[in-house]
Image (cartoon, rainbow, N blue to C red; front, side, top):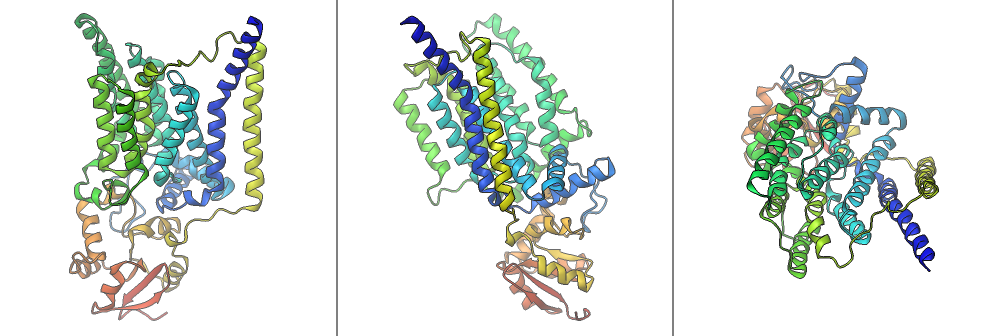
Length: 490
């Protein structure tokens, strides 16, 4: 009887070890099948273009050379490593490359979260939290650098939380993870900012003498992490460039991903907040003040900027895992207890089979599906006409900037808001959205614009229709072109 029980535990252990990989494979295949939904942000164009420039020149940009409004202005790419990865994948497989890369990043994120939660929670709950995190992040799962940094963020915060849970300090062996994050995306500043609150989780409940020593070790780790974040080709400029976006003031309320969360209609995020409250009430959770501070901080970030909802979705479960596990009547077993070498080989073989099946499915799917970028971000016909006319200074819609950069056309504005600054972009939005239409002729004259390329559903084209000295020469469902009256006819 005891031998039967032992064999059953060993089998469960092997199956448990494969669950994170199964969750990752399922997430990967799901987003591979829905790959076109990842290609909905024109920023992907200029991200790939910069990656191609880095590969071609074996150097990194320090100034802008894609716009005619900010030529030579200081600018650094805090996502250079992600841009290179996207460029390489695009060169190899076309748009399928960035889709596959993004789907792999989502898979790693889900699998990593399940693996970290498994320390404290039963496997079904770990999987449920991971799936809910993916659902909450759907609006921001796009082929852009922040997705490649997502699994690194989860691993980093999971490492900090594990150290805090055991009342210790993080191992310095994890510092390269911060360096990797700093080269992938500017969001690494969140990882630095969370070191302080995490340290107070570790300190809570200790004797005063131990608190001082532990706080000192966390402080030294924080300094080392700050230094590790500067291990990039840009050095300390990476940190400065990553924080510039936070100084855009009013502009952050205009750009959709930086706008505050809205509860005008019921959303998954609203459901998550209500669910979080319900869990606390039902379970009768009593959290330490530092954990409460962490949850409130992540919630405030998500309420302030919708792009931070993914951080809320993936990181709050890590903060709650230990308290929830202590409330559970069934504690998770050690996945590696009593495993023999043959059992580990079986687990490894199963993992290889899952990976092989995922890659085979990818090859089969790619053989009959061609990934395409969303049409409303790609004004192909309108841009072709402008090129035939020889337009040099095009007043383009914000969402068209990435596509024009991809076609080597100098832009008026694009998604690099930190380059242009708050006033410039706010004047642009106010002029083209009808909030201050009197700004439009001033901008057109100040920057010597010879043609405009604006979205068909925006107020800008209607304003230009009534603006003296300008005439409409082209319109479709995506874009509208206006040129000066004295411009040469096509």
